[in-house]
Length: 113
Image (cartoon, rainbow, N blue to C red; front, side, top):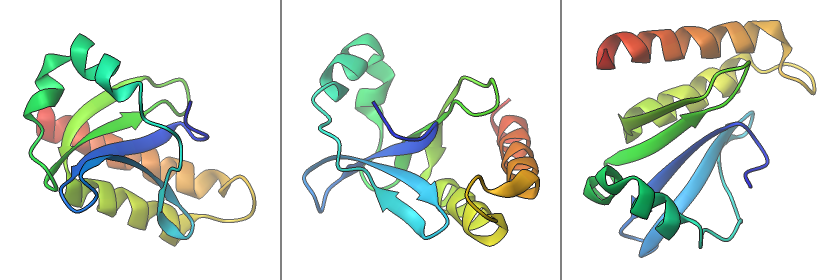
């Protein structure tokens, strides 16, 4: 139900709930979608109950035929947002931003392999 195939979910102590963000040319944008389904996701993936608030995220990449899910430090999510913000061109982002996003996830795969 997210409008984009790249998002991260953070248990925010400030908001008192799970918040979804997606990287955009303007930086991290908070999703205004209702996250009632989060309880079902956690029920089916109990390791998500252990995410450290404000520190760890569920990072989702469903771009370019990928279907990857990571438990990642929040700083990596903001790094990804910086990649998008720095390299985005036009309406679709341009090929360079997608190459940079692919490289970001390849490096993340190397860290968590």
